[in-house]
Length: 492
Image (cartoon, rainbow, N blue to C red):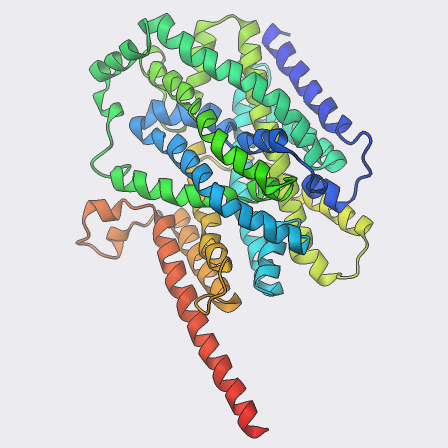
């Protein structure tokens, strides 16, 4: 057994221990399981939200896209920083409503905001299908990280299996508390690894960050500019806007918001987290360096660039530390994802069928849904083959279809009701799913469309259609309801 594998195994054991120990001194009920009894302060909220940034996608997909796609990768820190800026105004509104109405999940929020059980069911379903690709990213990434950093001793399938088991155990035992404890360990390790590698590798191989980009300019200049078609500027801008609005609508991020002790802690994080996000640039430096140092990685294999360059540069024991940090970038986000998804299904489906169920029954059903979600994602992680960033973009394209309903829900307006919200969401999600299957572009519908418009993210287009359909259906149903009410009055 090599030293790298020993260190990775040790980190996995510590993560399991911390996850289980997190319940100490707490009487677990649904509220405690889902949102920590809404008692998390600024630090834990910071770490849990940051956990949704520094995932295996950042660890592998971010550096992988810098390696394979070049400048297009910069959409990642751009949309995350914009999401935090927007959250300063949007997230406190969500928290206040949830506090007032005792909301513990995303479906429950929409259900009570629009006074519609059917909308709650729709949101629970959308949250699930958006979460599955995101969990798949983490499980696939975990398998890659452990397999590569153990020098092939552990297969990706076995690594993903072990990771799924660890998450399942500590989530069913501790809920969001296990995620919070492990988030502390994860952020300490990932910050050390990403910052150290992002500084050391450019200086070790090129003499600095500026010489690194000068070398890229000589060898692969197209990596430093946007493409004229495809991942062009219009794709870049539309994807940033789309993902920024969708960030806090991902069920796991939404759950973290609901777990906050006060809206003040959420505003503090909105101010500080953009600075923390800038550290993602260090992952990109590694990916750009790998273009020259480990050439030849094609397609999805570009996700291996960080690990391949690390293995080329350092001894096995340090590779083990990198692998251990990478392991945690999967375990922490996955644990929050499966927990939030499970509670969403419990409140969006089970509680509607069994409204008088006890707290113990709701907790048990939530844990059963944890098993269901992790097993479903695990199966897709085996049979799926898309690159990590593509899966990430698909998840955001789906969940952002809730944005119009969320924003309109802040106001007392006739332009969006439950019927319109559901119609818009279903229409938008259908467009995103059809695009995922067929990869159609706007040019397939409008052959003469300029490339700048053709490259707009389909999820962004879906939101525009979503809003149009939602407002149209809302106005029609409002008029119909008003006429029906008038007829009843005349009869009386």
